[in-house]
Length: 153
Image 1 (cartoon, one colour):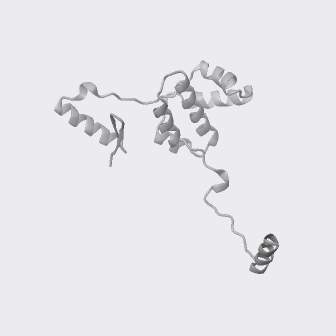
Image 2 (cartoon, rainbow, N blue to C red):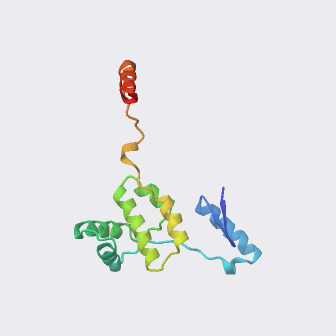
Image 3 (tube, rainbow, N blue to C red):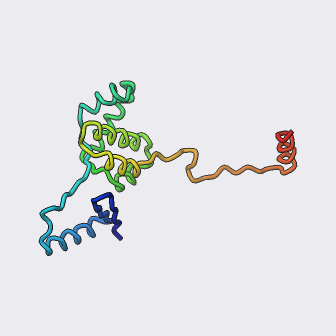
């Protein structure tokens, strides 16, 4: 089911599958209104200026910047979207790279603030302390009552 987003005087339609998007574009073509369809996607490009951004603007160490550049090279050519997030979500460093890369793209004027924030909302770093397994503690109710009474005094 597509999601329709209204922002001020803009309407954005997000499709859950490429097939649905293709069908919708074909429908618009049959109506003759495809002249104004703009396909925007953010693709990862290996860019040496990103190194400078990491060192100068983000003030990262050369080792960390080199690691990020290696990840960038591996992800080069991929589209920044939810499918990419699902592919890399188990590697927090790749997710962090994408978030930093989006900040860089915004800084150099390749994407809007809205696009940066929308994509960053997809690429969340998983909290390792909340990995799905809750820590279980056996609580002695008498000890709990004693401690609460001590705290109250």
